[in-house]
Length: 150
Image 1 (cartoon, rainbow, N blue to C red):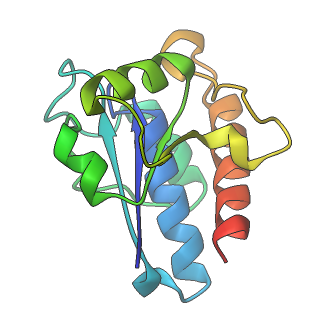
Image 2: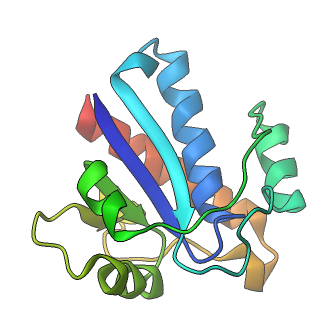
């Protein structure tokens, strides 16, 4: 089983979108038993909060439910538990490395590294309000990630 943790700043927009998009993709392929997929935050700001309403609406527009999600902050122990820790932007990468004390096992990557836009950041709808751009980035990244894994 491959254990994947998506991470963003607050765990209410980008990382839960990636979590639920990838869960939907593996479910549709009938391979959900091969994966454990979750998402977390690097900050404590949104702990306990559900998916941000516009992100929830964007998922719902595409037939994906995200009920029951509550934001939580990743810890050092999560580095040991998960096989892959996938972040949305450079700030997330820096904060994850601070939390984990580095990346000796090369588990940390950026979501768009699994596309032809390696090194680029997933659009942050918290600041832009553009959930369409975030949706495109997340779905493209998850498709590329899944293609690499299977």
